[in-house]
Image 1 (cartoon, one colour):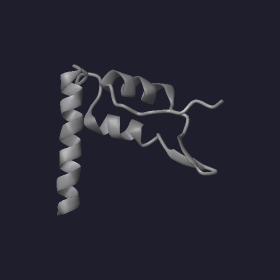
Image 2 (cartoon, helix red, strand yellow):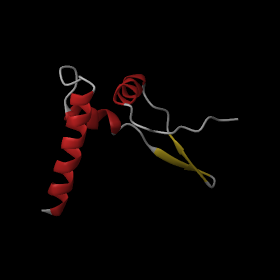
Image 3 (cartoon, one colour):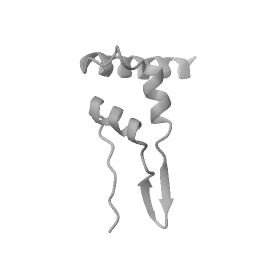
Image 4 (cartoon, helix red, strand yellow):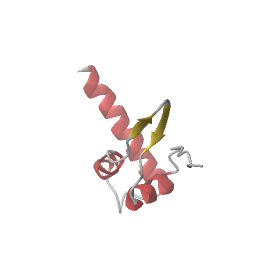
Amino acid sequence: MFVNFIALILHYRIYNLLKKHDLLKRYSPEDVITHLERVYMLKIGDDWRISEIPKKTNDIIEALEIPIMQKSGS
């Protein structure tokens, strides 16, 4: 029951982000979740890094102004 409550809160936070950025006609909250499932954290040595983000997923992240930090390699 508690997990359902947390899932509902996250669903409506995504819904409100889509509404705020006027993207409800293009994406549903389920679409956003599906695209964000493709972002992984990788442990390389002692460092945690974000995996390569697909272009469409990155477009959604930028459109919704989601703060995902990506370290650049040196």
